[in-house]
Image (cartoon, rainbow, N blue to C red; front, side, top):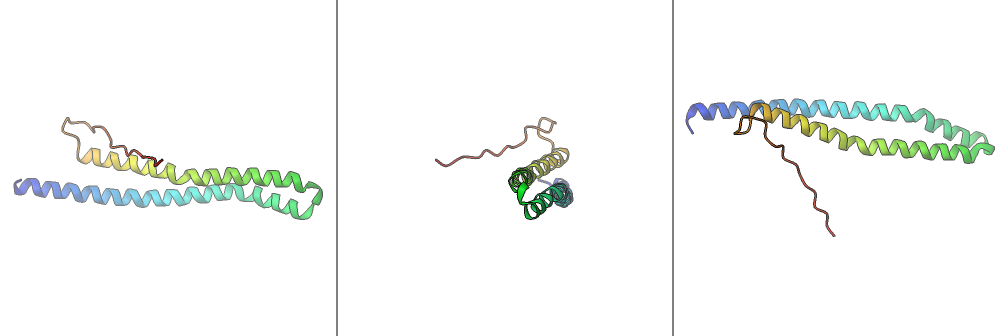
Length: 120
């Protein structure tokens, strides 16, 4: 490896690191923005159900059912959020790396996919 290639490789590495850091920060902001959107979308319905349950004993069963349905939907969306954002971040990182370090064939090549192994 001569000096010119080492400098170029080092510059490429710094470029990847800088872009990855900005992408990671953007991903964090996007995650928290979406978290607040989900929370804000379910909060009124959940609080209304709680209010009905505490003020009108005749509608307690119906309000409890609505509350449970809203809590299930809320928790499902909140549980899916990290997975969705991590996949998006990973795809953005792969794009950055592919633009800076294309594969030997000249294309972006096959992205690396992690495979989970389940323990019995």
